[in-house]
Length: 413
Image 1 (cartoon, rainbow, N blue to C red):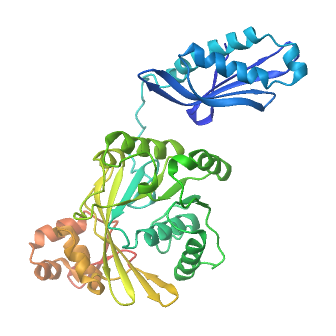
Image 2 (image 1 turned 90 degrees about the vertical axis):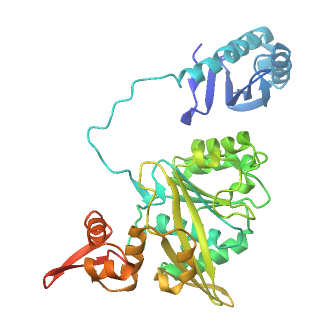
Image 3 (image 1 turned 135 degrees about the vertical axis):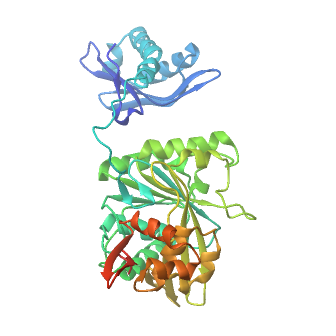
């Protein structure tokens, strides 16, 4: 039996011709092996017209009999007259018996050949969105995560290389939290604040009141249709797979996101009494490639955001805090900028600061300084400061002034 894999490996299909020259199609998606047998979403069609579909226990003969009988009764009369129900059932039995084995066969072990040379991992937005990986951004509710997610989405989609370290890619923003009108208002304000055409659209799936589980199929279709390379989900708490403190729903959320797009960003909340980790099972931390903690400081007309990487695969965890400033008036957002740490001093108290971060924060406040000046200012040894500066040429640029090298942060604006 010729059983073919569906694009993306999400299931299998088989087609055969009837004596009437019409073609029957079988398809199974979303295989799940349970204690009662292998289950899947099964479809029978004729000439691309659906006759019947359901979630079926593929190992139960009585379920297959009812399913085939229902599909047979939906055949066009002229086709049904020339079609043997037993032939249809026999082919469907073979498909159910071999389809799961064919799908599992694609997951067998094989020899993996190393890359020809060492190379740094690629990012869509460095250091937060590694290409081919998943990132979770978490923090307390109502502290600006959605603004940050939209800013990141627009920056990557528009390729704002002068403001962020990004690789341009097609972005799909999945909105499960807010009304479409609210998101449109924010989109306008962020476009203007980032200096791009205010009418620039962002590919968006608005599904307030629905869950990730509800929209999975339409989400997959949109990703294929628009060649999406990054999915941003607002938010994980609306996934709809069950209690986030249980391991199984958590792994299903991560597996679903990994399955629909190779690079994704999901927003998550922190527990009410503890903002140091993602709310829910530890499998969120295990499943994501990068975990980013968001801290914030609110003032009368502005909001300071700090992003700290707490977990990272294939890259260094210790990174200087990434700062964003958001300005507001009575109509909403007006400005987005990269602030100096002195503008939002409470952000610097939110996480322990190591020597590398102290150096970065100090140089963010001055135009340039020598290693000796930096060491005296932050109370560290000159040799340690010099070592950190010289080992991070991508972060700091040096200029000789007199007898000493003076350092400043690259690309600070």
